Image (cartoon, rainbow, N blue to C red):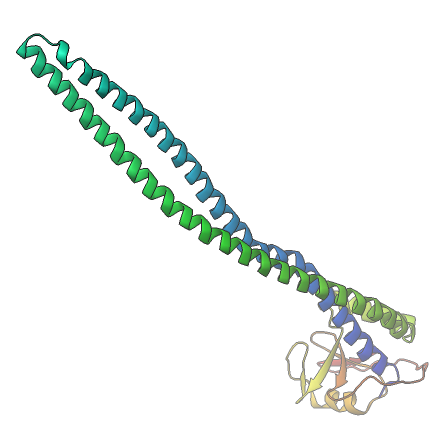
Length: 258
């Protein structure tokens, strides 16, 4: 096995974890916004219910003033009944009182309807307030968990950054440059394992001769399809002394040596 391969495997594992941590941290604002959404919805519902209660309460007070005015008007009309001289005027006066009483009844009915609606809305407000409290508690819990997660990820990232620098320093510069280029081209996966004769990077079958070279060769082998550096499944990162090997070319329909 090439002495630099364990370091590359280790470096890729570190880089992949770093990329995953950065991805998770980028998601935190969206997760926080999603956690805040139920609280925002519950708060808006409470505001709307409160605004409706306030508007209907004002309308009820207006109706109550109208009712007072109507009752006062009826009392005044009744007081003038004794002043009426003719039967015709008397009948007209009674009709006027009747209409005033009818209007009074309509106002009273409207007030009762408003009171019932206000009571219903007040019950809804109480339920909305309970939902707001629940949503606030849930949001605070989620915010606390996200803050803790972000802090833990940040701490892990600092450790990994140090490990990444150490692992990268153990790789020859030209090979590290090759690795970095492949990492950019292949979405952070510069290396791929070989399993059952298949490159696990591109999932294509490799020539048997190349698979054999990956197993036993001291040279780094490359997939001829996706150009990732290949390693045999089961090889693990291990301490290995730096070795200066002289590269040579290996040509195959699906592989080459570095």
